[in-house]
Length: 215
Picture 1: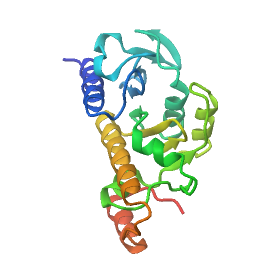
Picture 2: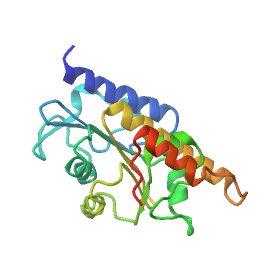
Picture 3: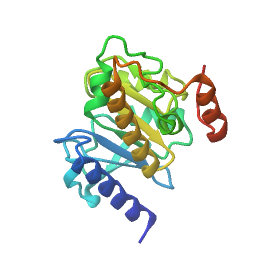
Picture 4: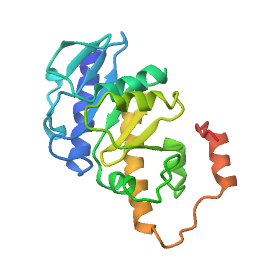
């Protein structure tokens, strides 16, 4: 099996896993992953994560659609991460329930929207930026991500959903799942005065695991 064939199958397998567990529904969400030659495999526009066909994934080369079905309209979101974070091997965007809910609450911190509830939330995501609302498909979303200058591997678009970049497809999907679970915990404990990780504990994780944690 070629590396491209394996990656195509991995995209579809992981997408179906997230769909089956309700992390995204209908025809929402999109995934991209970089091949060794720099081309991107991208889920098609209007496709359902539960029924993706590996052979029909879009192929982009130099930003141009060269094979497969038409790509998601959110290509600008994905390209922004590849352009600003050289280690990015895959990008996942979902419309997951709890992170969207957290994005619309008035006291959510736009610089660091997830409270430090668990060690893995810090380790896998670093600080998650909350970006303002954009119309779906608006290229300005990509510009907003580029404006972060590669300092964040995960963002949440208000009223829309999270976008996460990882070194490969598995890392991106696992970090996405951590984001949604942390958002769920944040909502479950909201107003209860939970004991969060303190600054010393956070910095211990940052140093030990090389977490990106800008001031």
